[in-house]
Image (cartoon, rainbow, N blue to C red; front, side, top):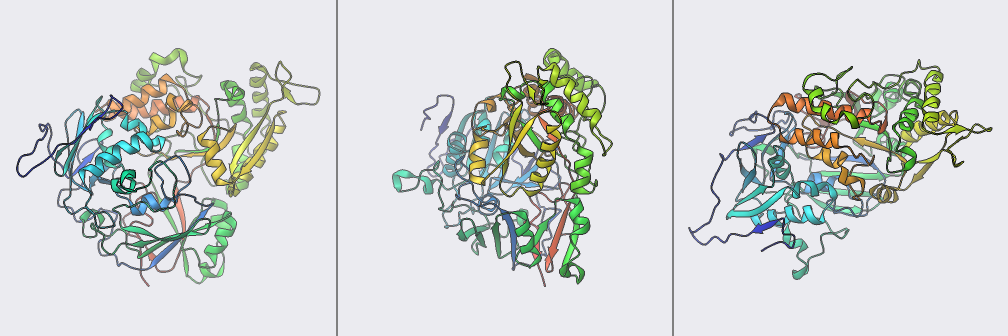
Length: 607
């Protein structure tokens, strides 16, 4: 079968009896694969380090979500699907150990094979792998899933598929992907792709079209199935008693709850009251000030709720207001710097968090991958120097966020006004900033309904901008409209969060690649269009030298920070969890802390 696109081909190899056709082996079959070095766990490991294989099973856990959902297909751009669908009902060829920076071990696949340059990857499926309806997971399902996600799925899947030269079955249970270029991360990326059942979307046999939003549950091979749901109110997942992988060592001590439920609320305040009443099992507290003074209620005092702090060693990522640089208003770095200067972090942090949280100073802060203060040196400088003429000010010489004294931001506001005048903006007699044509400096801050804390931050920010003669308006819309507008880049400024791992790779091109300037649905909300950023991402993907990898991440960090694409908020070096009695987690915490792979995966219920 040949694809319509000549760049890619999928070759089905028929296997009859003992006569099989296979590609020559260039590597060694392994039980796991790491971005660098070797997997930490041996082939005969009995459980992941941060899971307790003796954990009891049973019970229920309920989470609170703000907003709603209108789809049960999280793999396409249309609709909003519950997080739990991907997390609980669908599996990938390999699974991630969050006690290592980036290492995978076999799940649907019993082994993985690649060469030193990682020009290809071959997976061998487990014979016992089954979907929730009892049908086997086949090579055909794998090939179809990879191709369909890459061509019809969400934009986040397309970059990896564009690097696949061929995909072919090499045996009854093995499949090989050959790449157009070496990419150290690509074997791992494909290992984490969700594997779906082709038959469910076979329109010739009565299946539904994959690319259409639907409330029909996706058939997966994961530990849970969708039990009941009501959009806007709840979705409940029930553990599959016939789950094929319940005895797999990778899953020992994981997926212990009989039932996992997500209840939906209009805003955080209502959701928190539901938690206090016992209707929600766990509450993640994002606000340091509330953590200090809002948890003195009866269930905490009498011990029915305990307070846990979970530290982590992952990068801070970015949390803040992002500029849409596709808008002419924000195309000039001086304008963006002026608006960063107008954001009085010290005062707002004191108001919101009691001043407890550290500011996000870079995209990879809180880790060895974060840029270092001052001028670029060594490998970092050598990587950036070819782009020196096009780099924003500060990328090579050093960039740091402005600081106020927490009481007055006048010095920063004066500097902001000087930059705005340099960029062609002057205040009129009424103090309103206008350009040469007389147009006022005005823009919208687009927010999702239910963003209570961000709304408070935006309100304070709007007041500060008024002092510069800038008219900023807050526009709060429902979640479905918000997804539609941000996918189409129909906003001036909005709140965004970019989580970063200890092993950045292909996802960075989705975040900052120039294709996302015009391609709808990418995660490049800022509209970053930088040859230097793309070159640093290419280096992350191509190098086999850990030192160069670290330098490339630090160099990318410099390009992004000096590009002034966001107004950074703060981050928490630990998660704060309020937990109802009966819920427990292992003593050994993963290096990523409270992240994917932790809650609810390794938690359990016990009276």
